[in-house]
Length: 175
Image (cartoon, rainbow, N blue to C red; front, side, top):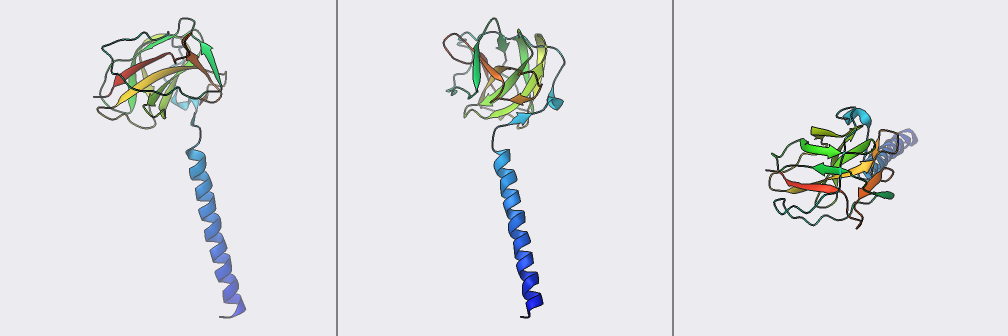
């Protein structure tokens, strides 16, 4: 093999390594904290939500506390979700919010499937999802107070909790 051919082979291998490393970095970034832009905002209305009381007609699930950099004790916020068909959006029967907030949908492992921004309280709302719910699975709608940028980031937005520290939430089963 002459020197010119060897140089082309080394350059080709280097390019392949760079492409693999860039792909790996992009994949690692995507599995990090989800940031959902205001492009998925459902309405320009603020959704009102309050603390969830235990409802024995709702499915039971073991939801871990979602991680957030800050929490705020609820001051009348609520969210209510009915059991509903599996799909790429979640119906919210009612949300009562005191400030512009996000309603995020989590699975039982704590992964957030999507979030909808609401400026005011409302009824019969819809939260679009990035990943569809699955029939037979239990999910949880939780409230995060927006930090003012209208971009959902559970590390920066404030999780609304009850006085006991549990997230203000509503659980539902996808059918």
